[in-house]
Length: 537
Image 1 (cartoon, one colour):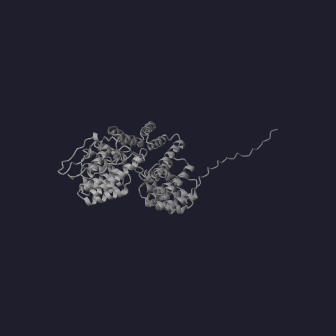
Image 2: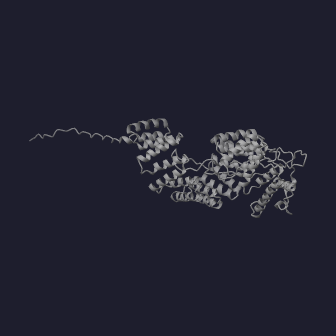
Image 3: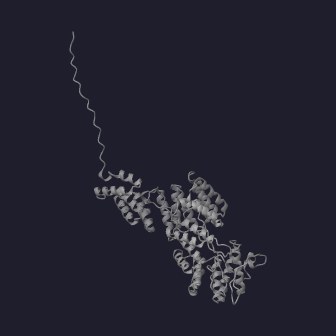
């Protein structure tokens, strides 16, 4: 018996609709797009989207304002970026990142004390951020508070052993004249910094071996650094600088030619090239290169210093006066600049101002023999033998001090010869180190050219420099002292003319501004009959 079983009617199973993506709050809706265009460096599109976003949110979108401030800073509009970052800090007062950017903008505007206050406020919000401590240390360097700077940099190293922090800490010790502590810092940096940062390791080796006076060892580390990174601009510049120091101008020029491909607008590079031409006695080419360096970095006193020297060499005394005066405005405590300015003024027949410049140089100087020697020559030429004798005796005191403390027992032969001739003219100098029995001066082996004189035989002149460097040039009756072209010691590890930077990856963050203060001083002027040597920055 069959029974019909009635099955329930099949029902169509409806697929569930996918849930709609949640709507983002209007304030943050385009943040992803702003970020995308920013990291692609498509700043024009990014600014257009930011403008639209801020219009919709009535200026309340923190991220849009933040990125707009970063773009403003990249465009060089530091004041506008500061105002925008301050707006971000108002929108989100608990963000340490906003305060860090406010402080960074203040730092770029040169308001270091205000930047320190903002960084301290940011440190209260985030005590584990090594960048804040590092940047605080950099700001303290600018305010000359080296003790606080050292404390902050050591704190940054406790949080993160970063290579930039080691470099800044080493520079603080160099600025304070504590070479031993600087060497210890660089040794520690080599031990702790990652093995992958080989260029930095070799940079530290180079620095502390040069501080120890082991230049050959430093040159070996330079070669190792270039092996790992053949295109490293800083290492190439340092290698060329060391070659230039030893008079290998052609080899140094080959190095600089390689560096020019990667950094064609580097002021230190063009300065060094110019001084190579100067060493080769190609003065017009030297001036061209130095003026290019001066165009790229108009406030670099080293470049102005070298321009003054080259113009003195070419007997263009008015131009030399112009550049030396500009250098003095930037380095008012440097005695050699006043001495060279006096040389230019002497040749411009301005004896009164030349004497004032020499007096200022003597007041600032503590150890340079040539300041007193040149001043004595100038006074002798002016007929003031009593004052000339006082300056000569001061030079004697400096010589004996250097010999007694073993600072220097080898003096330039022409300096010795000139001092002996001046001493004979003044009937002094019997107590000088090189005048004592048993001290064989090489000056007797060197002949010197002389100018005609009606009253007395003038002392030797440097034909390489002509009358440019002589404080007595133009006076036929006078003794002429011609110092050799002074040089600027190599700074092998850095681009030399920039200020220290807070380390960060933001495009608006500080660059490596190496030189908070110039850590190197120009080498002492020397009187040489041979070709002048001008060492690179």
